[in-house]
Length: 468
Image 1 (tube, rainbow, N blue to C red):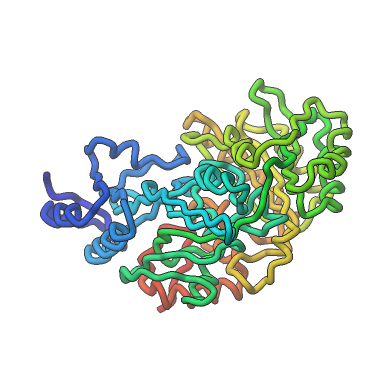
Image 2: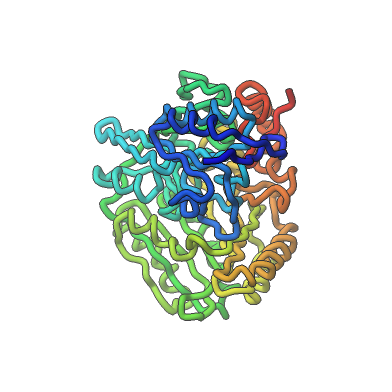
Protein backbone atom coordinates (compact mmCIF):
# COMPACT_ATOMS: atom_id res chain seq x y z
CA UNK A 1 0.00 0.00 0.00
CA UNK A 2 1.12 3.54 -0.69
CA UNK A 3 -0.06 7.06 0.03
CA UNK A 4 -2.82 8.26 -2.28
CA UNK A 5 -3.24 11.61 -4.01
CA UNK A 6 -6.88 12.69 -3.66
CA UNK A 7 -9.04 15.68 -4.56
CA UNK A 8 -10.29 18.12 -1.94
CA UNK A 9 -13.53 20.07 -1.75
CA UNK A 10 -11.77 23.15 -3.10
CA UNK A 11 -10.59 21.29 -6.20
CA UNK A 12 -6.96 21.01 -5.15
CA UNK A 13 -5.25 17.78 -4.19
CA UNK A 14 -3.50 16.40 -1.15
CA UNK A 15 -1.50 13.28 -0.37
CA UNK A 16 -3.57 11.04 1.87
CA UNK A 17 -1.33 8.86 4.01
CA UNK A 18 -1.72 5.12 3.73
CA UNK A 19 -2.09 4.85 7.51
CA UNK A 20 -5.17 7.09 7.38
CA UNK A 21 -6.69 4.98 4.59
CA UNK A 22 -6.01 1.77 6.52
CA UNK A 23 -7.63 3.22 9.61
CA UNK A 24 -10.63 4.24 7.54
CA UNK A 25 -10.89 0.77 6.04
CA UNK A 26 -10.76 -0.91 9.45
CA UNK A 27 -13.83 1.05 10.49
CA UNK A 28 -15.89 -0.18 7.52
CA UNK A 29 -18.02 -3.31 7.47
CA UNK A 30 -18.24 -2.97 3.71
CA UNK A 31 -15.47 -2.87 1.11
CA UNK A 32 -13.05 -0.03 0.37
CA UNK A 33 -11.71 0.16 -3.16
CA UNK A 34 -8.89 2.27 -4.56
CA UNK A 35 -7.41 2.48 -8.08
CA UNK A 36 -5.85 -0.83 -9.07
CA UNK A 37 -7.94 -2.94 -6.71
CA UNK A 38 -9.95 -5.82 -8.13
CA UNK A 39 -13.49 -4.61 -8.77
CA UNK A 40 -12.55 -0.91 -8.82
CA UNK A 41 -13.07 -0.38 -12.55
CA UNK A 42 -16.50 -1.99 -12.45
CA UNK A 43 -17.51 -0.09 -9.30
CA UNK A 44 -16.57 3.29 -10.76
CA UNK A 45 -18.88 2.89 -13.79
CA UNK A 46 -22.20 4.70 -13.87
CA UNK A 47 -25.17 4.33 -16.19
CA UNK A 48 -24.16 7.15 -18.56
CA UNK A 49 -21.21 5.95 -20.61
CA UNK A 50 -20.31 9.57 -21.37
CA UNK A 51 -19.20 9.88 -17.72
CA UNK A 52 -15.73 8.37 -17.18
CA UNK A 53 -14.30 9.35 -13.80
CA UNK A 54 -11.76 7.81 -11.45
CA UNK A 55 -12.50 8.29 -7.75
CA UNK A 56 -9.64 8.18 -5.28
CA UNK A 57 -11.64 5.87 -3.00
CA UNK A 58 -14.94 4.00 -3.25
CA UNK A 59 -16.57 3.01 0.05
CA UNK A 60 -19.11 0.26 -0.68
CA UNK A 61 -21.20 0.73 2.43
CA UNK A 62 -22.80 -2.25 4.16
CA UNK A 63 -24.97 -0.19 6.50
CA UNK A 64 -25.67 3.16 8.09
CA UNK A 65 -22.58 2.93 10.32
CA UNK A 66 -20.42 2.75 7.20
CA UNK A 67 -22.12 5.84 5.80
CA UNK A 68 -21.55 7.82 9.00
CA UNK A 69 -17.94 6.67 9.12
CA UNK A 70 -17.41 7.66 5.48
CA UNK A 71 -18.97 11.10 5.90
CA UNK A 72 -16.81 11.77 8.96
CA UNK A 73 -13.68 10.62 7.13
CA UNK A 74 -14.41 12.83 4.12
CA UNK A 75 -15.12 15.84 6.33
CA UNK A 76 -11.98 15.32 8.44
CA UNK A 77 -9.79 15.22 5.34
CA UNK A 78 -11.78 17.83 3.37
CA UNK A 79 -12.35 15.34 0.56
CA UNK A 80 -14.52 15.89 -2.47
CA UNK A 81 -17.38 13.43 -2.06
CA UNK A 82 -20.07 11.90 -4.27
CA UNK A 83 -23.00 9.74 -3.22
CA UNK A 84 -24.08 6.83 -5.38
CA UNK A 85 -27.51 5.21 -5.13
CA UNK A 86 -28.54 3.70 -8.46
CA UNK A 87 -25.85 5.58 -10.42
CA UNK A 88 -28.47 6.47 -13.05
CA UNK A 89 -28.20 10.26 -13.04
CA UNK A 90 -27.50 11.52 -16.57
CA UNK A 91 -25.17 14.25 -15.26
CA UNK A 92 -22.95 11.69 -13.51
CA UNK A 93 -23.40 13.17 -10.04
CA UNK A 94 -22.85 9.72 -8.48
CA UNK A 95 -19.11 9.79 -9.07
CA UNK A 96 -16.11 12.12 -9.12
CA UNK A 97 -12.45 12.36 -10.02
CA UNK A 98 -10.03 11.87 -7.15
CA UNK A 99 -12.55 12.11 -4.31
CA UNK A 100 -14.49 9.64 -2.19
CA UNK A 101 -17.59 7.90 -3.52
CA UNK A 102 -20.01 6.77 -0.83
CA UNK A 103 -21.55 3.83 -2.66
CA UNK A 104 -24.96 2.69 -1.37
CA UNK A 105 -25.51 0.06 -4.07
CA UNK A 106 -25.13 -2.78 -1.56
CA UNK A 107 -27.91 -1.39 0.67
CA UNK A 108 -30.81 -3.49 -0.67
CA UNK A 109 -33.08 -3.97 2.34
CA UNK A 110 -36.84 -3.73 1.64
CA UNK A 111 -39.57 -4.24 4.26
CA UNK A 112 -43.22 -4.14 3.10
CA UNK A 113 -46.10 -3.63 5.53
CA UNK A 114 -49.04 -4.99 3.50
CA UNK A 115 -51.57 -4.14 6.21
CA UNK A 116 -50.52 -0.52 6.66
CA UNK A 117 -49.65 -0.25 2.93
CA UNK A 118 -46.21 1.18 3.52
CA UNK A 119 -42.68 0.12 2.65
CA UNK A 120 -39.22 1.06 3.84
CA UNK A 121 -36.39 0.54 1.37
CA UNK A 122 -32.66 1.28 1.58
CA UNK A 123 -30.83 3.78 -0.58
CA UNK A 124 -29.25 1.29 -3.00
CA UNK A 125 -32.54 -0.22 -4.15
CA UNK A 126 -33.64 0.16 -7.78
CA UNK A 127 -37.25 0.47 -8.86
CA UNK A 128 -37.19 -3.00 -10.40
CA UNK A 129 -36.13 -4.47 -7.05
CA UNK A 130 -38.64 -2.31 -5.18
CA UNK A 131 -41.54 -3.40 -7.41
CA UNK A 132 -40.60 -7.06 -7.09
CA UNK A 133 -41.22 -6.86 -3.34
CA UNK A 134 -44.25 -4.56 -3.26
CA UNK A 135 -46.07 -6.28 -6.11
CA UNK A 136 -45.92 -9.55 -4.18
CA UNK A 137 -48.69 -7.91 -2.13
CA UNK A 138 -50.43 -6.21 -5.06
CA UNK A 139 -49.00 -2.83 -4.03
CA UNK A 140 -46.84 -0.16 -5.66
CA UNK A 141 -46.02 3.52 -5.63
CA UNK A 142 -44.92 5.92 -8.36
CA UNK A 143 -41.46 4.85 -9.46
CA UNK A 144 -40.12 6.30 -12.67
CA UNK A 145 -40.26 4.65 -16.10
CA UNK A 146 -37.00 2.63 -16.12
CA UNK A 147 -36.54 -0.34 -13.79
CA UNK A 148 -32.79 0.18 -13.28
CA UNK A 149 -33.18 3.70 -11.85
CA UNK A 150 -32.39 4.06 -8.14
CA UNK A 151 -35.29 4.90 -5.83
CA UNK A 152 -33.37 7.54 -3.84
CA UNK A 153 -32.21 9.85 -6.61
CA UNK A 154 -35.50 9.77 -8.46
CA UNK A 155 -37.52 10.48 -5.30
CA UNK A 156 -35.29 13.29 -4.05
CA UNK A 157 -35.75 15.08 -7.37
CA UNK A 158 -39.54 14.69 -7.34
CA UNK A 159 -40.18 11.42 -9.12
CA UNK A 160 -42.34 11.28 -12.25
CA UNK A 161 -43.59 7.88 -13.36
CA UNK A 162 -46.35 5.73 -14.79
CA UNK A 163 -48.50 6.14 -11.68
CA UNK A 164 -47.97 9.84 -11.05
CA UNK A 165 -51.29 11.04 -12.50
CA UNK A 166 -53.20 8.72 -10.19
CA UNK A 167 -50.90 8.46 -7.15
CA UNK A 168 -48.78 11.62 -7.28
CA UNK A 169 -45.01 11.86 -7.55
CA UNK A 170 -42.68 9.45 -5.78
CA UNK A 171 -41.83 12.29 -3.39
CA UNK A 172 -45.53 12.93 -2.74
CA UNK A 173 -45.71 9.37 -1.41
CA UNK A 174 -42.62 9.71 0.78
CA UNK A 175 -43.54 9.31 4.47
CA UNK A 176 -40.09 9.61 6.00
CA UNK A 177 -36.40 9.45 5.13
CA UNK A 178 -33.35 8.49 7.15
CA UNK A 179 -30.43 10.77 6.38
CA UNK A 180 -26.81 11.26 7.45
CA UNK A 181 -26.00 14.97 7.44
CA UNK A 182 -22.72 16.78 6.84
CA UNK A 183 -21.79 16.70 10.54
CA UNK A 184 -22.21 12.91 10.62
CA UNK A 185 -25.53 12.97 12.46
CA UNK A 186 -28.27 10.46 11.71
CA UNK A 187 -31.71 12.03 11.41
CA UNK A 188 -35.18 10.89 10.43
CA UNK A 189 -37.15 13.49 8.52
CA UNK A 190 -40.93 13.21 8.36
CA UNK A 191 -44.10 15.25 8.84
CA UNK A 192 -43.42 15.21 12.61
CA UNK A 193 -39.59 15.17 12.81
CA UNK A 194 -37.32 17.74 11.17
CA UNK A 195 -40.31 18.87 9.15
CA UNK A 196 -38.35 21.58 7.34
CA UNK A 197 -35.84 19.03 6.08
CA UNK A 198 -38.64 16.68 5.06
CA UNK A 199 -40.12 19.45 2.93
CA UNK A 200 -36.77 20.00 1.22
CA UNK A 201 -36.05 16.33 0.59
CA UNK A 202 -39.26 15.98 -1.40
CA UNK A 203 -37.87 17.41 -4.60
CA UNK A 204 -34.77 19.25 -3.37
CA UNK A 205 -32.26 16.58 -2.29
CA UNK A 206 -28.88 18.21 -1.54
CA UNK A 207 -28.79 17.86 2.26
CA UNK A 208 -27.09 14.56 3.08
CA UNK A 209 -26.87 10.84 2.41
CA UNK A 210 -30.35 9.32 2.42
CA UNK A 211 -29.92 5.77 3.67
CA UNK A 212 -33.56 4.63 3.59
CA UNK A 213 -36.95 5.89 2.45
CA UNK A 214 -40.45 5.05 3.67
CA UNK A 215 -43.30 5.26 1.15
CA UNK A 216 -47.06 5.10 1.05
CA UNK A 217 -48.24 2.23 -1.18
CA UNK A 218 -51.31 1.90 -3.40
CA UNK A 219 -53.26 -1.11 -4.63
CA UNK A 220 -52.10 -1.64 -8.24
CA UNK A 221 -53.02 -4.55 -10.44
CA UNK A 222 -52.81 -7.51 -10.56
CA UNK A 223 -52.70 -6.25 -14.15
CA UNK A 224 -52.76 -2.85 -15.81
CA UNK A 225 -53.53 -2.02 -19.43
CA UNK A 226 -50.27 -0.83 -20.92
CA UNK A 227 -47.89 -0.89 -23.85
CA UNK A 228 -47.28 1.13 -26.99
CA UNK A 229 -49.11 2.03 -30.16
CA UNK A 230 -46.79 2.61 -33.13
CA UNK A 231 -47.51 4.88 -36.10
CA UNK A 232 -45.49 5.71 -39.25
CA UNK A 233 -43.25 8.74 -38.84
CA UNK A 234 -44.84 10.31 -41.92
CA UNK A 235 -47.93 10.94 -39.79
CA UNK A 236 -45.99 12.33 -36.80
CA UNK A 237 -47.64 15.78 -36.95
CA UNK A 238 -51.13 14.28 -37.03
CA UNK A 239 -50.24 11.88 -34.22
CA UNK A 240 -48.95 14.63 -31.92
CA UNK A 241 -52.02 16.78 -32.61
CA UNK A 242 -54.21 13.79 -31.83
CA UNK A 243 -52.15 13.16 -28.67
CA UNK A 244 -52.74 16.76 -27.58
CA UNK A 245 -56.51 16.31 -27.87
CA UNK A 246 -56.46 12.81 -26.38
CA UNK A 247 -54.62 13.95 -23.25
CA UNK A 248 -56.98 16.89 -22.73
CA UNK A 249 -59.82 14.60 -21.64
CA UNK A 250 -58.23 11.41 -20.32
CA UNK A 251 -58.81 10.29 -16.71
CA UNK A 252 -56.20 10.39 -13.94
CA UNK A 253 -55.87 6.59 -14.08
CA UNK A 254 -54.11 6.95 -17.44
CA UNK A 255 -50.58 8.23 -18.04
CA UNK A 256 -49.30 8.49 -21.60
CA UNK A 257 -46.09 9.60 -23.32
CA UNK A 258 -45.47 10.40 -26.99
CA UNK A 259 -42.10 9.83 -28.65
CA UNK A 260 -40.56 10.31 -32.08
CA UNK A 261 -37.76 7.82 -32.63
CA UNK A 262 -36.67 4.64 -34.36
CA UNK A 263 -37.70 0.99 -34.07
CA UNK A 264 -34.94 -1.59 -33.49
CA UNK A 265 -35.16 -2.53 -37.19
CA UNK A 266 -34.36 1.06 -38.21
CA UNK A 267 -37.79 2.38 -39.17
CA UNK A 268 -38.56 5.92 -37.94
CA UNK A 269 -41.85 6.02 -36.04
CA UNK A 270 -44.16 8.01 -33.79
CA UNK A 271 -45.10 6.09 -30.65
CA UNK A 272 -47.60 6.63 -27.86
CA UNK A 273 -46.90 4.73 -24.63
CA UNK A 274 -49.73 4.21 -22.16
CA UNK A 275 -50.36 2.83 -18.70
CA UNK A 276 -53.96 2.64 -17.47
CA UNK A 277 -54.33 1.50 -13.86
CA UNK A 278 -58.04 0.95 -13.49
CA UNK A 279 -60.64 -1.61 -14.62
CA UNK A 280 -59.35 -3.25 -17.82
CA UNK A 281 -62.71 -3.10 -19.61
CA UNK A 282 -62.99 0.62 -18.91
CA UNK A 283 -59.42 1.15 -20.06
CA UNK A 284 -60.11 -0.59 -23.36
CA UNK A 285 -62.93 1.87 -24.03
CA UNK A 286 -60.76 4.86 -23.17
CA UNK A 287 -57.88 3.66 -25.35
CA UNK A 288 -60.01 2.69 -28.34
CA UNK A 289 -59.47 6.06 -30.14
CA UNK A 290 -55.72 5.59 -29.75
CA UNK A 291 -55.90 2.17 -31.34
CA UNK A 292 -58.10 3.30 -34.23
CA UNK A 293 -56.38 6.55 -35.16
CA UNK A 294 -54.03 6.38 -38.11
CA UNK A 295 -54.43 3.42 -38.28
CA UNK A 296 -51.34 2.31 -36.32
CA UNK A 297 -48.73 -0.02 -37.79
CA UNK A 298 -48.53 -1.91 -34.48
CA UNK A 299 -50.70 -2.11 -31.37
CA UNK A 300 -48.87 -3.66 -28.42
CA UNK A 301 -51.23 -2.48 -25.67
CA UNK A 302 -52.52 -5.36 -23.55
CA UNK A 303 -53.07 -6.33 -19.91
CA UNK A 304 -49.74 -6.88 -18.15
CA UNK A 305 -48.43 -6.94 -14.62
CA UNK A 306 -47.15 -3.58 -13.40
CA UNK A 307 -43.56 -4.88 -13.15
CA UNK A 308 -43.59 -5.41 -16.91
CA UNK A 309 -44.62 -1.79 -17.45
CA UNK A 310 -41.69 -0.60 -15.36
CA UNK A 311 -39.21 -2.30 -17.70
CA UNK A 312 -40.97 -1.61 -21.01
CA UNK A 313 -38.68 1.36 -21.76
CA UNK A 314 -35.44 -0.13 -20.42
CA UNK A 315 -34.16 -0.78 -23.95
CA UNK A 316 -34.62 2.92 -24.80
CA UNK A 317 -32.35 3.95 -21.89
CA UNK A 318 -29.51 1.42 -22.08
CA UNK A 319 -26.63 1.49 -19.64
CA UNK A 320 -23.19 2.34 -20.95
CA UNK A 321 -24.37 4.39 -23.93
CA UNK A 322 -23.40 8.00 -24.60
CA UNK A 323 -26.37 9.91 -23.11
CA UNK A 324 -26.90 13.65 -23.49
CA UNK A 325 -30.25 15.14 -22.42
CA UNK A 326 -31.94 18.51 -22.65
CA UNK A 327 -35.34 19.25 -21.15
CA UNK A 328 -37.99 21.82 -20.28
CA UNK A 329 -41.59 21.97 -19.18
CA UNK A 330 -43.82 23.25 -21.97
CA UNK A 331 -46.50 25.95 -21.85
CA UNK A 332 -48.56 23.70 -24.09
CA UNK A 333 -48.32 21.69 -27.25
CA UNK A 334 -49.40 24.05 -30.02
CA UNK A 335 -49.01 23.45 -33.76
CA UNK A 336 -45.73 25.38 -34.00
CA UNK A 337 -44.22 23.32 -31.17
CA UNK A 338 -45.32 20.14 -32.91
CA UNK A 339 -43.87 21.28 -36.24
CA UNK A 340 -40.54 22.10 -34.61
CA UNK A 341 -40.36 18.78 -32.79
CA UNK A 342 -41.16 16.79 -35.92
CA UNK A 343 -38.58 18.71 -37.98
CA UNK A 344 -35.75 18.00 -35.54
CA UNK A 345 -36.74 14.39 -34.97
CA UNK A 346 -36.73 13.86 -38.72
CA UNK A 347 -32.98 14.57 -38.68
CA UNK A 348 -31.91 12.59 -35.62
CA UNK A 349 -28.12 12.12 -35.48
CA UNK A 350 -28.33 8.46 -34.39
CA UNK A 351 -31.02 5.74 -34.38
CA UNK A 352 -31.31 5.81 -30.58
CA UNK A 353 -31.73 9.58 -30.32
CA UNK A 354 -35.32 10.70 -29.89
CA UNK A 355 -37.68 13.34 -28.57
CA UNK A 356 -40.35 12.61 -25.96
CA UNK A 357 -43.36 14.44 -24.58
CA UNK A 358 -44.19 13.32 -21.03
CA UNK A 359 -47.59 14.01 -19.56
CA UNK A 360 -48.14 15.42 -16.07
CA UNK A 361 -51.44 16.56 -14.56
CA UNK A 362 -53.82 14.58 -12.40
CA UNK A 363 -52.61 13.97 -8.86
CA UNK A 364 -49.36 15.87 -9.58
CA UNK A 365 -51.37 19.07 -10.00
CA UNK A 366 -53.70 18.29 -7.10
CA UNK A 367 -50.96 18.29 -4.46
CA UNK A 368 -50.63 21.67 -2.72
CA UNK A 369 -48.05 23.87 -4.45
CA UNK A 370 -46.26 24.69 -1.19
CA UNK A 371 -46.36 21.22 0.38
CA UNK A 372 -43.07 20.00 -1.12
CA UNK A 373 -39.94 21.42 -2.74
CA UNK A 374 -41.02 20.09 -6.15
CA UNK A 375 -42.19 23.02 -8.24
CA UNK A 376 -44.13 23.54 -11.48
CA UNK A 377 -47.12 21.44 -10.43
CA UNK A 378 -49.22 23.25 -12.99
CA UNK A 379 -47.05 21.94 -15.88
CA UNK A 380 -48.98 19.88 -18.42
CA UNK A 381 -46.10 18.43 -20.44
CA UNK A 382 -42.38 17.88 -20.12
CA UNK A 383 -40.15 17.81 -23.19
CA UNK A 384 -37.19 15.44 -23.03
CA UNK A 385 -34.62 15.50 -25.83
CA UNK A 386 -32.26 12.53 -25.80
CA UNK A 387 -29.07 12.38 -27.81
CA UNK A 388 -27.99 8.75 -27.44
CA UNK A 389 -25.30 6.74 -29.20
CA UNK A 390 -23.22 3.65 -28.42
CA UNK A 391 -20.23 5.24 -30.13
CA UNK A 392 -18.28 8.05 -28.39
CA UNK A 393 -17.27 9.31 -31.84
CA UNK A 394 -20.91 10.25 -32.46
CA UNK A 395 -21.40 12.03 -29.14
CA UNK A 396 -20.49 15.50 -30.45
CA UNK A 397 -23.15 15.45 -33.14
CA UNK A 398 -25.71 14.07 -30.65
CA UNK A 399 -24.90 16.91 -28.26
CA UNK A 400 -25.11 19.51 -31.02
CA UNK A 401 -28.47 18.14 -32.23
CA UNK A 402 -29.93 18.08 -28.71
CA UNK A 403 -28.80 21.65 -27.97
CA UNK A 404 -30.10 23.03 -31.28
CA UNK A 405 -33.40 21.18 -30.83
CA UNK A 406 -33.73 22.55 -27.29
CA UNK A 407 -33.01 26.11 -28.42
CA UNK A 408 -35.62 25.83 -31.15
CA UNK A 409 -38.21 24.72 -28.57
CA UNK A 410 -37.58 27.64 -26.20
CA UNK A 411 -40.50 29.76 -27.50
CA UNK A 412 -42.79 27.00 -26.22
CA UNK A 413 -41.06 26.48 -22.87
CA UNK A 414 -42.56 27.53 -19.54
CA UNK A 415 -39.02 28.30 -18.33
CA UNK A 416 -39.17 25.52 -15.76
CA UNK A 417 -37.44 22.15 -15.81
CA UNK A 418 -37.58 18.80 -14.00
CA UNK A 419 -34.42 18.71 -11.90
CA UNK A 420 -33.81 14.99 -12.52
CA UNK A 421 -33.33 15.71 -16.23
CA UNK A 422 -30.67 18.38 -15.81
CA UNK A 423 -27.19 17.70 -17.14
CA UNK A 424 -23.86 19.00 -15.89
CA UNK A 425 -23.68 22.63 -14.73
CA UNK A 426 -21.07 23.45 -17.37
CA UNK A 427 -23.66 22.56 -20.01
CA UNK A 428 -26.79 23.83 -18.27
CA UNK A 429 -25.64 26.95 -16.43
CA UNK A 430 -26.24 27.76 -12.76
CA UNK A 431 -29.58 29.41 -13.45
CA UNK A 432 -31.11 26.12 -14.54
CA UNK A 433 -31.20 24.78 -10.97
CA UNK A 434 -33.07 27.92 -9.93
CA UNK A 435 -35.44 27.34 -12.85
CA UNK A 436 -36.24 23.91 -11.45
CA UNK A 437 -37.55 25.40 -8.19
CA UNK A 438 -38.68 28.92 -8.90
CA UNK A 439 -37.45 31.95 -6.95
CA UNK A 440 -39.37 31.46 -3.70
CA UNK A 441 -38.74 27.77 -3.31
CA UNK A 442 -35.11 28.14 -4.27
CA UNK A 443 -34.61 30.72 -1.50
CA UNK A 444 -36.32 28.39 0.96
CA UNK A 445 -33.97 25.58 -0.11
CA UNK A 446 -30.98 27.89 0.33
CA UNK A 447 -32.12 28.50 3.93
CA UNK A 448 -32.23 24.73 4.49
CA UNK A 449 -28.78 24.39 2.96
CA UNK A 450 -27.50 27.07 5.32
CA UNK A 451 -28.92 25.11 8.25
CA UNK A 452 -28.01 21.53 7.35
CA UNK A 453 -25.00 21.91 5.02
CA UNK A 454 -23.53 25.41 5.43
CA UNK A 455 -20.14 24.47 3.93
CA UNK A 456 -21.72 22.88 0.85
CA UNK A 457 -20.11 19.57 1.78
CA UNK A 458 -22.68 17.83 -0.41
CA UNK A 459 -22.02 19.68 -3.65
CA UNK A 460 -21.99 16.94 -6.27
CA UNK A 461 -25.68 17.28 -7.03
CA UNK A 462 -27.86 19.80 -8.83
CA UNK A 463 -26.42 22.17 -6.31
CA UNK A 464 -28.24 24.64 -4.12
CA UNK A 465 -25.45 26.84 -2.85
CA UNK A 466 -25.51 28.06 0.76
CA UNK A 467 -24.98 31.72 1.53
CA UNK A 468 -23.47 31.49 5.04
